[in-house]
Length: 271
Image (cartoon, rainbow, N blue to C red; front, side, top):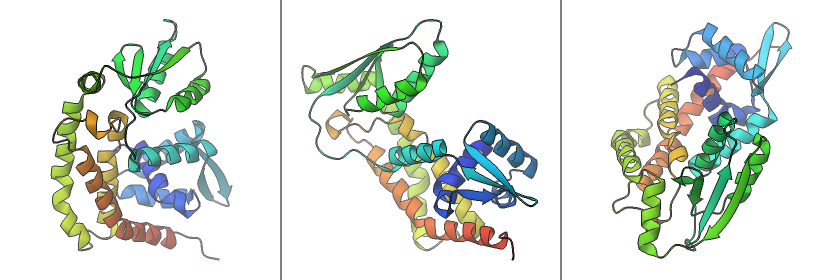
């Protein structure tokens, strides 16, 4: 687990619910649970402040880091993509985003592709991305934020039928590879659920286990378009893996949060 990702996850799963602020020495103490040394924590926090993800202020000799508005939005969006799943039947329509980006703006093209992937679009062709979910408004909003010289055309269409739909899904996403990785996640965490229900692990180990769970699951929303059942291959493991993740995350919540509160409480300044 990378130090920068750990800081985001600590804020996203714990510190945001405790005011969105943390004293540097408390952050150092929490990061020590993951064998991240204090100098590294200081460097990462300073860089995140410079990049606009954190703000800082001094209270005597103490430095406190606070979430910026941009980070609050990022954490909200990330939580929605990680924990939520599309509900209701599919109407059979595909939503297509076709873009043109000047060759001189390759970095912009890559940013656009990452954004489309995050929103659940898959590449049917190099500049043609599709999704069974109508998130074109989000695409346009993201495009405005990116700026640059991008032309975007959006279409809503149906294919020739169910076989064509499944073929498009398999071409736009690596469903077989994704299913294998979901199966591996299930094989790792499903056997641990019984111990979690018994309240194990506790303390520091509970925090580390829950953060490792989040780290292992975090990239799936970038890869999984949350397809409707009729587009998924037989024996799909994604839904079961998501349910196992939710169960594990919920079962580890109390002991992990208790440890975080203990660390923060011990390091609270005395009056």
